[in-house]
Image (cartoon, rainbow, N blue to C red; front, side, top):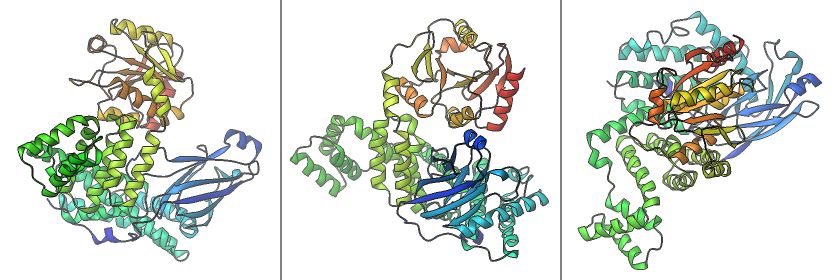
Length: 559
């Protein structure tokens, strides 16, 4: 099957793909900020996206002054980006940011009253002041047309390829058509039109990728060509979601290629091997450097030269294994995709595999990958999230160095408790659970190597922030099937993802012993225990289903 790309996709794409990193200054004031509101919510949180990772900590808090004024600076990697304002859950809005200054004003007396709360000045003021009109009209039109609104996905996956294309295009057109309401009150700001068209088109493309993934279809070159938009403005949450779905599709294509030709996927051209060794091996003699240069130029090698390469590789195996692994994957990307799609997958390689590497390895690999990228936004986005990923290195080292773990939970870092035991699983688990009787427990069954578990853990910090502090989080680490899992990497992951609570590391025997008590005892499953020690739900929703999960946990606490 081959998807046809609609001309609608091309509308509103910015040509400024190579903007330099700059800053957005956000300043403003909450009018009529009284003392009670100030004590309840003394800061505003501003967040933005990263194209390589949907769940990134790209937030800053702007403390409020006594008069309600605030000021904060955010880095900008694209010329236009969606920014999200959250005033302690009391007020929320999305606006368009650009390098420069945005001024925001809203009334503390009108947080739950007025149809319009926020007023903007500065960069993109026209688009931001019109956005609330567009949003209300979009919701109205989607509600009036359920087939393209609330019921759109009910039959989407069973449609034929042609029907899917038509439905996805009509939904995008309906969303864009809501701009006419803005136009009836004046001229639609060009930045707003570009923003809305971009979001609508990105959702359309995401729907086509979702359909391809669900039905096992290949993509036409026209749809792949549309991925040039990943490196241009505006950067939105919808753009990041589209990128993520393409990344999943790309991973599947690489796996299929690897399965079809395993020998090619595990090798590198001699020229590339020689260059990597030349640039990254330590303590090379001048003769070895000259010989490597000759092999890199020639591009072929006799047995004696291959033996020479293998000898140098063995002397620098740790770092070269790291780089060779990326280079093999990168080679597959280059054989499958051109231009932006290939560059995006290369930049995404490390964020996708963060959990596999120590923070020192992440730094080494990040520098190497950035040296191979040609699109500045991707290189800058990678650098940004690697800096976030390694910022907890001091706490990670403390956690890894802590060796006094026993059958009783021990606090290794503030808020993190570890426990391991050789006793029977039921006896151990019952004793630990009894310690928290009188409190509601959210019980997590997960495995570090399990992709579903890691996806859920990405939302754990946000879930904990939505719950009272007396809720107890207990993590049962299930053993991996036929795979060695580095305990140090697990500890690094726990600290990096703020998985505060009590962690119990089960062996296979303990897992079998707990099969009935914790059923289902599978990675990425959850349970809720009432304060009286009885299960409220043995198959509770995970952190990703945030609203539903909070409701279940709070209900359990009231029983």
